[in-house]
Structure formats: C-alpha cells, structure tokens
Length: 144
Image 1 (spheres, one colour):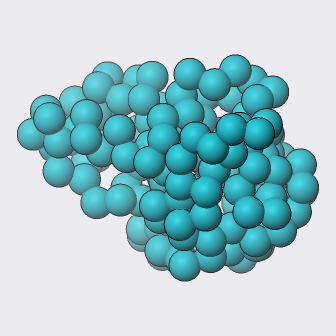
Image 2 (cartoon, rainbow, N blue to C red):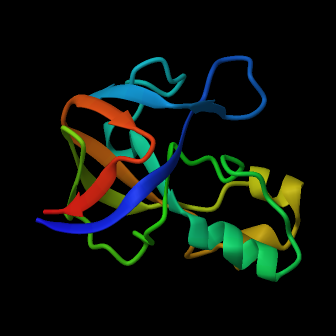
C-alpha cells in the first residue's frame, strides 16, 4: 500500500440544489454516496474523483473555478487521471475501484466555453465502492 495523497474537499449533489454541497465527511456503500441524488443510479459511476490540478489548469487559462464546480465528489491533492481501470484506492476504511474516465458534460460550457476542450482528459475519473465506510476531509489516499 502506497500513500499517494489526501482528500481536500468532499461534495454531494442534493435534489433541487444548483451546486454541489460541501461536506466534512460522508458515508459510502456499494450503491454510492448516502444522501447523494445519484445514489444507486449507476454503480460504475458512483463517485467522481478529481484533482486540484484541474482547477490549477483552468486558472492558468484565466478561468477561476470554485471547488466542486467540476461535479466531483472527492477532490484530492493527487492526480488520478492516469490510473488504469481496476486500480484500487483506500481512503480511511473505504476501498474504491477506478471504473472509467469522466466524459465532458455540457454544464462545463455554461461556466466557460473553453472548459470542455481544456479539461477533456483532466476533469475526473469515476470509481465504484468495493468496501463501505466513511470518508473524511484530510483522509490519506493509498493505492493498493
């Protein structure tokens, strides 16, 4: 097990809320994040992991973004985008498995029309839950 980073921010989507809601912690099980409006909808896309690198890349292009705006559930100080499908990450008591790269959504072009092209390969990566538990801000992230 190798430490690769830590959790900077956590977010969930709530029905009726325009933006992601910042949390200090949340519980996950094999259906996703408890309390999230996408819970149980697509196991392969249960959790979106993003890196602060995406925000820095946007900032370098003059696009200031607030954390959570990319739709992530977990923002890390480590860039997971090059991880292979099947790679497992341990965060606290939780184990996640990388399932696929995140496709670019139209909502990014509403923020800035350059964003979809800019973040084509740097927006996020999806994971499913292998082992349930809680995830907290500042938890270490380990690669298994």
